[in-house]
Structures are given as C-alpha cells and as structure tokens.
Image 1 (cartoon, one colour):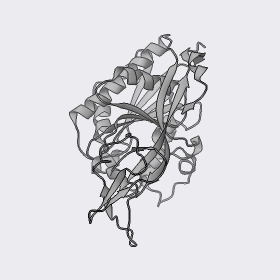
Image 2 (cartoon, rainbow, N blue to C red; image 1 turned 30 degrees about the horizontal axis):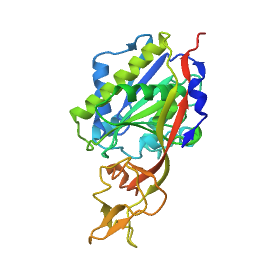
Image 3 (spheres, rainbow, N blue to C red; image 1 turned 90 degrees about the vertical axis):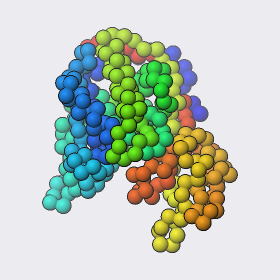
Length: 317
C-alpha cells in the first residue's frame, strides 16, 4: 500500500533548520539503555553536535530510582492535551506532575518554543530489533529514519507510525516540533545488554551525524520507507473471572513483524489447545511485551504502508 504520491520523492523542498535536540531516557524507569546512555552523555558533557545544541534529560527519576516502569501512572501516557492542561491537586499522580514539568521545559507542546527534535529512548521485551515510533509524517523524521536504515546493519530497523491527532498523542516525543521514540529489544526489564546498548548508541550517533550534515547545508535525496501503522490490539483469551487462559504460541513468539495470516496459531491454552488467528493478514508487534500484561494486550497488529518523501535541504533565514 502506497501513501502519498509516488512522485513526491522527486520533489524538492526546504525545511527550517534543527537548532536543538533533546535526548531522553528513563521515561520508563526499568528500561535501562536510555538511562545509561543519557547519564554517559551527561558525564561526557556532550552539548553540541556541530552547530546543533544537544540536551539530555532523565525523564522519570523516581521510577528509575525505584527500578519500576512508573510509580503511579505510566508517564508515557501522560502527554495528551487533556492531561497536560489538567489542574494539579494533592491527588494528582506524580507522573502527571512530571509530564507537565517536562512539557514546560521542552515545549510547550505544539508551540514555537518547543524543542526542534525530541528523541525518547525505550526498551521492549519483545523481539522487535530497532524501531522508530512516531506520530506525524514529517520529512525530518523520515529522512533520519532512512539514514539509519541505510547505515545500521546489526539488527532489523523498522518504523511504526501511530495515526493519532496531536492533541491525543500521549507519549513524550509528541512534545517536540519533530520527535520520535527509539524502541529496541529484546531486553528484559531492569536489565542492561551490551548488544542493545551499542545498537541504540549507534542509532543516536547516526542521528546526530545526519543533523550535523543537514545543518551544515547538505541536501538529502528523496525516497521511500515502509512503516507499520497500528490497526488494533489483541488480548489474551480470558475466563469469566478475567484470568488469562492461554499463552503466546511458540510460532508467534519472537516473530514480531512476520505477516500473520488467517489460520496461523497465536495462542496455546494451558490445557494444550491451539487457538488460531482469524482475520485479515496483518503484522504483529510488541508480541508478549512484559509491560502490556497489565494493559491486557498480548500483541498489536499493523498494516504496512509505503511513504514517499521529497529531496530536502535546510531553509535559509
């Protein structure tokens, strides 16, 4: 499926420069790659990438200190317009307070004052390789993604696009003028893995390399990228009391982004029965993600679309 006109990659456009980028880690306190990359960048006092200003933020310090995903409420669901504008009371969860602090520091969301590019670093327990996750289809994000896809060969590189209006966009990267999350796995919660750490570090180095080239006047050719667009979530089978009665089938486990067809096994009940998928052919991702047990999600399903993007260069003032 092709989104946008195929000839858009032949078009040329100029976009405003990226003056500042913010790199965040610890939005989920037990996803440690981002935490330690941010700390190392702070230790190295990395404040510039060419002409681009670099800021680092540990976003949920209480959850990091507790070694938990969050303390009261998932911070990565707190950046909707409704929550960012909600009044603060004694009963307001810490993460909502923190989201409003981050919005004031890095935004405000949707304003001219917002940071030019916001990158939030995450880990997943699912076998997803390296994934870009973003909301809006903008040329900066797609060009950076394509640059990483072309230059990072150690793991599969994929893009996930969440088709959600800006006002309802719930995660931290939505605060920036441009923004995306980098999600890498598999890595258990509360654990560091060198291979995962190195992949994220390489992706960030490539991002900063692209930004330096772009800000110094280098132009980039148009092209196409494939992205997975969320369609729906699938819960585990449950009994009348709401208890799960099955686990992810071994043929689906660790096969994120492998096309799921009607008749393919997806669950095995605890008594040994095999439950099969029924529906249109779609792509599963976040398969058996640990953090989604509480959300009653066994996996997401997506369509794959192709997006074209134009030749771009920096717009001179």
